[in-house]
Length: 78
Image (cartoon, rainbow, N blue to C red):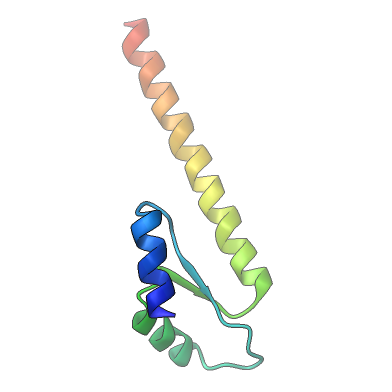
């Protein structure tokens, strides 16, 4: 896992890396330890949780893009 994360970071340095561990009834502390060991940004215990992270990240990107556009419009209007 760590090797894969390291290679992804080299190719996509700005990407958020989610470690997916599809195990039923896994301890959250164990998940966090795996995330730390792999040096991933996030860890998901299900596909649904991984999708939730992606949707949240996309929503934040849209929000930040809107703020930048609003700031740009304000500076060019004045």
